[in-house]
Length: 221
Length: 220
Image 1: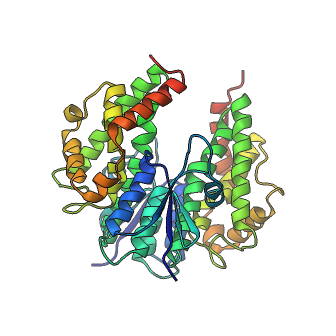
Image 2: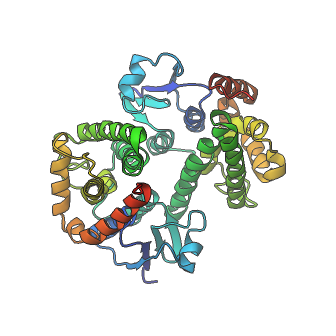
Image 3: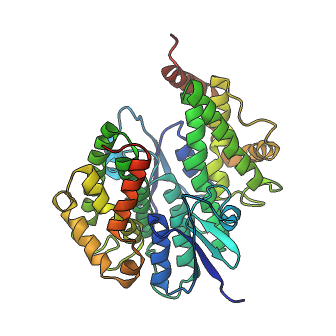
């Protein structure tokens, strides 16, 4: 049976970005369908992800897979002939899942408060966000990638949010370079990979979108 | 080297209970250490410096934290009585529901338990909506995993004891005959020896959650 791969996508979404990077790493050919997430969700999206009604959704031979990291693990298991995304060592694998989960809980949900919450909550969020980046920097240590010598699961989980680093800094009133220089260095290293540079949404366009959301929520200061 | 497995948990944590079930289902020998979270042991802080929480599994000296991460590690390390299916699509589905339990259902139920007034009503509505999704996923099946329990059953296990305790303490009505498949499932689950013999003591749970409820709903 032909391998039919469709991605329900929203280009600026960091979660969809993760999936685009994973597909590029594996060299998988796929059809991209852009969803207009802030306006009208397509019937296909509502059918394929009825519970969350969110992107990304990977549709493989008509069957949907939802949730970005679950999709990435699926991609790794199905297209397992090259470019492994998860380590084969079971303890390292658990370690990778632990940190990907940390990133899921502690980066974007906190960082997005900088443009969705009122000023005092946003200030607290900025402080917490910096602490979380410092924790990640400690985990990175002297390694070129979180995965060691090779780009892998944890790197993929985090790099998608690098489009938002500029917004984090600007709205949070801090400097990533000053607070966590190793993370900045790591992000630039990741950007040298074609799968990453091709997939990341532009940081300035991201910032425009972020400011738009802030304005829409009446949080213009 | 002889295999050394330790599980750090508390007597009541539903997240630790999952790991107990998984280890016992696979017949793995382990040492259980019950922590007092108001006075965390130096070992716990050393093994889980990021969150300082239970459960933590320590396998031959190497710690793993976060219950879903631990469950996958156990399944991959000890292959007997698998918790996850082999097919990648089915695995993705099991993981989807595990995430739904912990990121949507638990949160909405906890909000219903702890909040008041309008927030409580909204949390109730959200909880019922979430339970309906789970009911539909379960329909026609003995367990989420099919004939045998799998990841989703283990992760939803708190619906079998913790949710009824919340209901008893708060008067909330959530898991009732609006959800016949889920009710039947809690009965099937509770019949399994590994579940039946490991539920934390009911009376002790009521005391604990009654005290917690009163903290969130102080009598004016």
